[in-house]
Length: 497
Image (cartoon, rainbow, N blue to C red):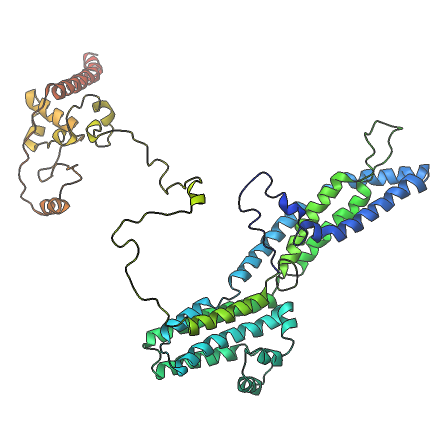
């Protein structure tokens, strides 16, 4: 008996949910009105007793009781208790709905793998689907009250056409103390095996796939039974229900207006408990959500439509495997065979706001108009210092350092060695068999692997250094010489001493 309201809230507007306030079926008003009227009558009785029956001394005692209860209302943690309870119930509710069982996959797989247009092939397909549906009917009879009212006895199931007379005799012949949900599935798997032997199923692999679909359907129905057999511990919903009702029972006294005009100005005498009424609707409605969804197999407004699901599964399953079998349209060229596809809209919808294409949020951000404006450099500690002076590409700046140049520590050799190491972004010289770093991402990686595996490599000539490079190297040498001079002065002073 699910109440559908999706059309009413399909478009978000300031007044969208206001429409739901004026509905009765499935609304919070229908859920709480009996409890609210009872509570309001009880509240009014206590108010009348205080105002017209109690004497002065009794009023003082009542006022002290009101102060005592009102100051301790937060002792009952309704928010936490209701929050965890509703979360557990909703999780359970949606899981049960996901495994409630739809016949579509079994019917489609049966129509696909059980081939043939003969009467025998039709019998195989229809009976496989009917046996699976029969099990769902038997299980729903034991779980759902609407389904139990529809099929009060097993004879009514046979009279409705889900079970043939000879099948019911076979069903009744097996006597034991537990449910016989397994028997129709045994019949369905036996038909699948027999269809393979008769040649209506072309491969053992197809038998496995079809049997697996039946197994999934059976497993889901078994879990429905398990969740019905083992509900939430009874103490959990009991304690939550007791907490909510106890809270508002205390509110009957705690939220009463008492006359304090003799002592202080206490404000307006609100005869009707306006704020407490809002609180009652919120908390009691919250509790009613859990009560309605705790067992979705009943006759509440939002319980499962089991009878509708049975009718839908049986009708659709037979249509798929019988009238829908072998009715594939003839293949022809589609309407866009020779032309590009152009999306078409109705005249009314064409004037509405266009949808946005699924693109990244930075897809249209352009940081550079051409590749010539971008210079790619390696990431190293000295890259920030050299990036301002670099005027050529990275490949021209990466140069190898020869061993003989690293041994020469004086003169122009040291200068060139120091320059090469700075420009190549390495603090230590390379080994004899080392190859220069190749930062060209379009180069052949296979060639690099081959060069790395061979001991003999071609020598890479030095790239000529320009004035900017030599200036950088000279500044580095001057810094080194200054550091060495400063470090040698203390040693000379120690020797003189």
